[in-house]
Length: 189
Image (tube, rainbow, N blue to C red; front, side, top):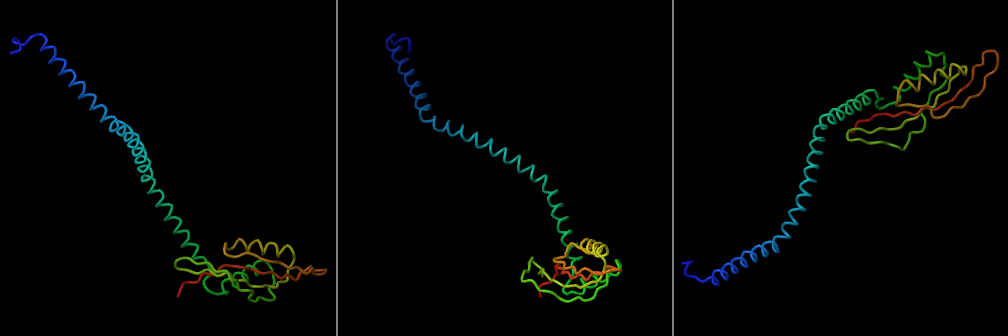
């Protein structure tokens, strides 16, 4: 059948086939270029997502450590709440009395001070700030040791103000007035 065709017809047929194939590829390239460009952009996004997945896997590995740290912090909070005075002034008065006796400080008077308006809340508790005023009789040295021991005895109390009236010879016993502020734990009722 091809043998019967003339050389010109074969060349014409070949040119038509070449134009059709070239046109087909040009149409594919023209219409596919945006899709190919988008595929390149998606490859960049895929790489970014892969990096995020790697980071997330690293964070998940650290999750166990973080959970342990959270649990340790919870236990410390519970420990502090167990050690914190509950509800009234008796804890601080007893502690003051014991430390004073140990260091030769004579307590003359203890009275409640100003109750602070500041209250701190958590999920289950309320923390009030309390104050007591104390008058003592002792030497400077004994008072210094007493204050040091008192403030180191609990993280929930501190000396707020001190007034000293100098004593006279021979014993140098000074009249000292000071205020102690401390936190009191109260459960919600």
